[in-house]
Image (tube, rainbow, N blue to C red):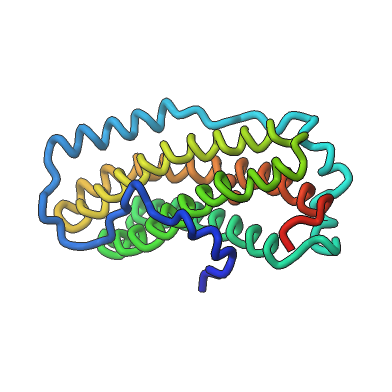
Amino acid sequence: MWDMRYSSEAFAFGTDPHGFVRKGPCHDGIGATDRLQSKRHLNMISEFEMRNTGMPADMQILLDTYPRDTWQAHPGFKENTEHWLGAHKMFRQLGGIIRVETEKFLDKSRSADDFAARLSYYGDMMVRNLHGHHGWEDHTYFPELMAADPRFTAGLEILEKDHQDLDVVLESFSKTANRVIQLAALDPKQALSEAGGLHSIAEVIEAFLKRHLSDEEELAVPIILHHRLRG
Ligand SMILES: [Fe+2]
Ligand SMILES: [Fe+2]
């Protein structure tokens, strides 16, 4: 179903510091402290400022020479790059699936149980793989691109900052999603009332990924093609 071949290197940093909890029996219950924490995470999301400016013009000079519609036919476009772009496609799909599934729960076309199982499966897949992917980019991929063409260091640093910002959002997502998953078993009405907050976070993640992944592709792929890297 999901193409997981996209880059074995991407899993080298695959430990998830935010520990997405899979669906299962809740032993601790959901108390007032959890409710307060959940509110705090939603407040963090409402205060979260997503980068709303594109890449500086001088970061796009190679994109003019290597526009997106020419990438696949270029002799420097290798399997590694195709898999990396495939990972981005998977992240976009996962962001969309999680938002849509939450909408289905909110409009009651998904039962609490069914929603919890899907949220657990897709949420875990998204969070775990995004952490692995971004860790690999920060530690391996971006340094390689910077060394090959230091003119684009400023753009790559913008993308690294995106990764840090996304970590904050993913932490809120994990905490809120885990709470909704546990409530789905203990108190489905409360799960429904808190799913609106989860939906807001899912929308932030989807929009964030849309900008970040597109900017990243349009910065990195022209560098790879120009310098014949990765393959
Ligand atoms: Fe990235
Ligand atoms: Fe990426």
